[in-house]
Amino acid sequence: MSVLKSAQSLITISVSFLYLIFVLNPIQVISSFLYPLSPNTVRKINRWCARSIWGIWVILSEAQNKVKVRFTGDVPVWKENSFVILNHQSSLDILVLLSLAWRCGRLGDMKWFVKDIIKYIPGIGWGMLFLDCVFVKRNWTKDSKLIGKLFNKYRDNNIPLFLVNFLEGTRATPSKIKSSQEYARKNNLYIPQETLVPRTKGFIAATSALQEHLDAVYDVTLGYPQTPLPNLFTCFSARVSQYNIHVRRYSISELPKDEDKLHAWVLERFEEKDKLMIEHRQTGSFPGQANEFAIPAKDWLRPEDKRQRANFLEYH
Image 1 (spheres, rainbow, N blue to C red):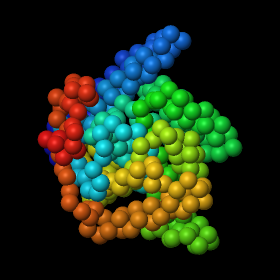
Image 2 (image 1 turned 120 degrees about the vertical axis):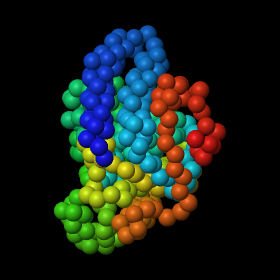
Image 3 (image 1 turned 180 degrees about the horizontal axis):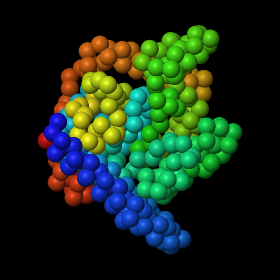
């Protein structure tokens, strides 16, 4: 990769952060004064802000830096309310999820489970605060009431939703995988090789509270064929060649209602996910027929209802 292309990419991402902090964040702050008059208008403004900045980052990686996005598994459904659970290896996972959300028509509707401290960070944190993301302190006693109120808000106001949760709670580093293996042995669980034992309380709470609002759960597995493992910086400096995304879609009606059974269901999904990651480490890809296409830069200017695809495979 040429030094010129890397420099061009870093300039683009730097300008995008200035746009976020000095244009979009002020728009979000100003929009909050409209909330007593029209909460829905405020949500629309913030949705546009999210789609604007996140869309720039998708275009940067796919159109400018020519990162290949390879999909396998189930075809996503356009504009359905979804709960997305996935493995977590790198900071780059965030950008890959943006590429998936774009293709689902939900880029501006993403809500993330994120650490509480993030909301104090100008730019990304402030933006996510206005988007009603789920900020957690990793203390379920303290988090549960606030999360419950937020879920009620999603449901009662019929807010479009692409809810993302890294159930492992942190990135799967070698030392954390070792600790997770010890925990699995002590608790007679499947012993993971590439992932961590998932935390299920947030997932159970969300699927229970949002049962009537959600259409599906997306079980997403992310993989990167290149080594060492890439991150956001290597991507933004044009040194990433490919993302691999494997999707399993489960209708919300398929999930068990009992909490213990739902807990077991999540553990089963992560056992499958771990086996997929073992295969990916060996082969550099996920199994199944692949679908590959890039988001054209011109689509950043088009509202989603002007570029709707009836079928995932029609995106050329």
